[in-house]
Amino acid sequence: MMSRCAFLLVLFFTGGLPTAQPVAAQPVAAQPVALREGVMLRQVLRVAPSAVRLAHDPSTGALYTLTMGGDLYHLALGDMPEQTQVASADDHGLHLTLGLAFGSDGTLYLVGNDVQDPFTVGVVMRGVRDAAGSEARTWTTVARSAPYPRSNTAFDHNFNGVAVSPEGAFLFVNSGSRTDHGEVQDNDGQFPGLREVPLTSAILRIPTDAEAVLLPNDHDALVQGGYLFADGTRNSFDLTFAPNGDLLGTENAGDRDDSEELNWLREGRHYGFPWHLGGNITPQQFPGYDPDADPLVNPNSYAYQNGFFYDDPAFPPPPEGRVFTEPIANAGPDADHFRNQAAGQVQDASDLGVRLYTFTSHRSPLGLVFDADSALVGDLRGGAFVMAWTGTESDLLRPLDDPGEDLLHLDLEKQGDVYDLRATRIVQGFENPIDAVMMGQKIYVIEFGGGGSRRGLWEVDLSATGTATVSGEGPRRFTLEQNYPNPFNPETTIRYHLARPGTVRLGVYDVLGREVAMLAEGFKPAGEHAARFEGAGLPSGLYVYRLHAGAFSQERTMLLVK
Image (cartoon, rainbow, N blue to C red; front, side, top):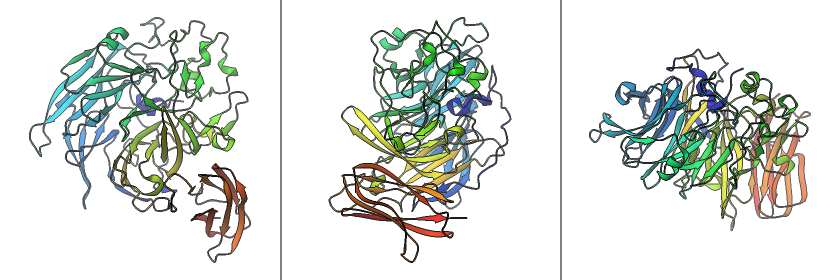
């Protein structure tokens, strides 16, 4: 079984120069499904094979996709949508490209990798338009890394994610790990005892006006040059600035069932890798570790099958005095499944009244976007959204009872030095969604894949959705969520949030207004609640569920299909 690491990117390459590999045939879903009332979906066009990035040029409003092979396409979204290739590796010189971002003036930045086996060189390129309205660009090198050792495994995550700071002065670039969890990866004995190196598992900061900067493979030199922004990030494939200027990054954990992360990335912080992953402590750092007795190790995983989990008495201790920064906590109700470390059973964190750090293992969170202009309404206003690359075809995600390949709404709240979030699934059924852009009230999503895949550019229109608010109450107070699953047979779950304790009534009614079931009645504390509805004895059809909580009242519809 092949590893899911870093959205399975490295599975399309062999050692040395990248070469295309066949993609295993998978059934293609008819189309994604909206799980929230008012969400409208349409496929705009079919993107190029291996399209890995989607980015918006704020100076023109245009959308662009980037393929892993270095091809750049302009996407026209008018009455006759089309894509036009405007650059290739012959123009900018990068044949393995994984990062794309635009500055406010339309300057384009590419992040790629020059594989010089057994080494990798990370490269950042700048493309400046030759003239207004022209797609021709002059390309110059912003930075190159010193060659650093490849592991020649599925854990060579390379240079990938990139974000431009709000004032346009810096680029923030993710350099992923070369190991799964800090184990020795010596590339068939070429690098004895080698684990991570200074240029890997880190967030680098580079001035946007830099010219051919050399990034050394030396920790102290990176710090002194101002290039090492944050450390201990395994693979933050998506870096995004929130409207308040904070830098957030999604994080892919390893092949063990540790949670995927969402981190608030800050200068000088260490985010735990390889000693901490997803709120868990890496057990291989302790003498006597036995992977066969570890309930979080899946025997189908690439790391297990290749012997990368083992008793490792030479595992280095964490830096003395170093305090690790933990991921953002997820209060659910979605994407918060985990495996209990004591007994090994899969549990739902929010059902237990606890929080997960941050998402269900192996989801591979990607495409983090914000409603930066506060264009949405109700509880979505000012929110964030993130996708999951992995689906239930994965031997790693499937046992965790999380569908993946979806779009989550993240209700992020910051209080002082801490973020919390509530994750709610609003679209499900993408096929390996890999990147997203938000423009106004619409989110555009691209799917990754080979020649036989759907490879859609999807428009997720949120203009007609949002939770109504009551007088005196702002958004993110009282909410009634869309039931899940929907349609359902015979059971479904209805979740709601109370801003303050009080008496509630949650009832289910048929289309004629007749009460079918009373799911909750009486006093409830503030916070998250869930109710299970059983429709086994009812006919197929549309049903209404209605929540009354003090002055708050809201109803939604659900569909029972037998």
